[in-house]
Image (cartoon, rainbow, N blue to C red; front, side):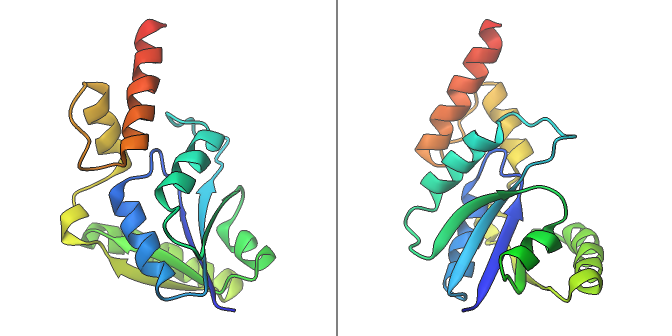
Length: 162
């Protein structure tokens, strides 16, 4: 069975993430959308919330499962018999950064990295941009699922009430 992982912080998951995961799902028998549990970095959403939003956003893909990991991605790959990491490239600067990581991952474990270019419709899109727009009550309906949009609204209303 050919397995691939689409790793990320997914804080929150965007249509750009879902597009890459869906495209990977067409190429592999199983795709694991894996949320990095980075204890040194506090995101807007807790890992269980990210997992929930990711499950909702990828529910249409029958061969995608959602998981979390901490530590090194190559260890997660080894533990789950994953031979390929799928990463998205939005720009040349993404490539410079991602290439170094891909080469190190290969050196450490032999796990290959496959780069997918972002759909031009989402090439500008990032979770941090979505958070910024949502913070200021902007319209993110074309950037995230309605479910994520609701979660963003609720999260920022909670923060404003504090």
